Each structure stands twice: as structure tokens, then as C-alpha cells.
Length: 241
Image 1 (cartoon, rainbow, N blue to C red):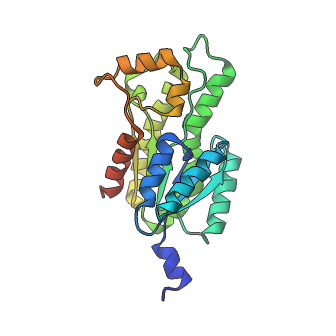
Image 2 (image 1 turned 90 degrees about the vertical axis):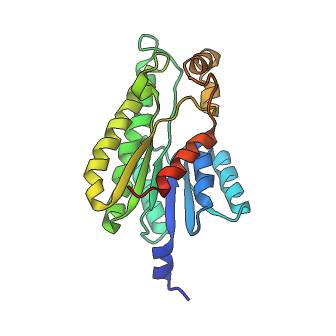
Image 3 (image 1 turned 180 degrees about the vertical axis):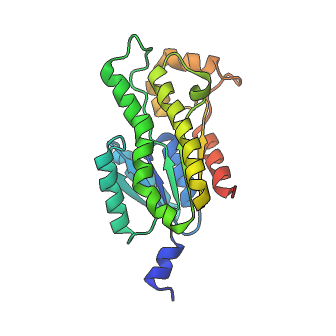
């Protein structure tokens, strides 16, 4: 029989921010299929969605817990981290998926309000810094772990209809490169995934004009699926270099 300490050592904890729907929910369900893994689903407002995802995981034989926090707020991220560390007796995350993102009223620089731009930067860029700062120290102490940051092809190619979002995600791309260099020597892999235009509720909420533009600027002339992104996460999780 395993002792509690042994059980703790064998446990794999995966936190998915923005995991109540869309890409995050699909990633959470994928990780829940991995033996010994407990998926932690973060949500800000969509508790119903988070509970639905956790229920689906449980019914399929997996393990999931939900945690509320606005990851754009450093104090809320710290609160969530403390709760997770308490609930799981200090067990570090094996994987952190920085997936939370938001497009706020798609518009160019001239139409966007100061509040929209600030909120977009906080949700899409600063959240990555806050979660990494909260969870990376315990990961580093074990000499193993994986961080996956969600960016976008817009960060490479630009996207006029969502300029603030594009700028924030370009920052995520740079953060990923910097953290990979900083943490690599300690055994922590840091990667980013830059999806193209994926059909999610956030995509739907962006409006018909933006979606028509998204399809027109995608080589396959269609939107991708959340499973396509989860496939990329699977690849990175199975990789060792």
C-alpha cells in the first residue's frame, strides 16, 4: 500500500486556465485521460461550464476539480495557488496550461476604448506572468514540469480587427522564449502554441465581420476545431526536448 507521500509523488496535477469551455475544456478532457492525472479547471465567471467539463471528465473515469479566479489579477491568482497547494498538500503542478484569453469588442486602435485595451492586455498577457510566478517555484524545486502558453498566429502575422489582442499575444510569444531559456536548465520545458482561427464561443462572439475575415485569411478557407489545438498540446506533452 502506498503512503500518502508516495501517492502525492505519483500524482500529476495539470492546471488549465480558462478551462470551462472551448479550447481549454478540450485540453482539460485530454489530460484527464492520462493515468494518475488530476485536472484543475480554472474559470472566472462560467462556473456552469467548468462544472459541466468536470462532470464529463468524471463520468469518463477521470479526475477534475474546479477553481475560480480572474487570472488577470495577481491577488486572485495567488489566492487560487494557495488553495490548490493546500488542497493537494503542496504537490507542485506537473503542467501549467496558460489558455485563458479574451477578445473584447473587436476593433482597431482608433475605435478601442482605454478600458478595452487595458483589459485585453491584462487577460491575455499579464495572466501568463501571474500564473507562472505563482506556480513555477514549486515546479522548479522538483526539476521537472511543463508550461504551455497559448498565443496566436496573429502574433506573427498581425490582425487589424483585433490589434490589442494581437499585441498581447505577441508578448506571450516573447515571454515563452524568455522563460524557456530561464527554466530549461532546471528541467522545465516552456512552449507556446499559436493556433490559427479556431471555432469557439469567443470566435462566435467576435462577430460575423471578424469571422468572415478569419476564414478569408486562413489557407484552408475554414476555421479549425478545438481538437486540433488539443492535438498540438498532446504532442508537446509527449515530447521530452
